[in-house]
Length: 126
Image (tube, rainbow, N blue to C red; front, side):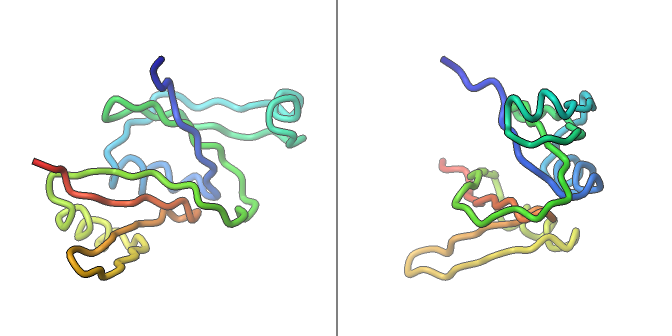
């Protein structure tokens, strides 16, 4: 078995370029609309929804555009970078929310996209 793609909900189309393309390095490969009938059958939402499909880092990502505020949950991705502080500096320059939690041996880092999706940030292990 292998993972084919991941899907997230975003609230603003601008996130596709600002967060996912510019900050995370994904490339937009396709846009489409999921019609209300199919959205109802799959997700129990009776409305048309725009979907942006991106690819990068060996991952296919589908972003479902929905202006409705999301509910709290524990869902998150964990991303690893060769230099996490360089990534955090880039995120700061793009005004991305950063959560840094000091710990005894190391701090824990998270960033949030503009819709509140959470990404844990680690440094590559050697």
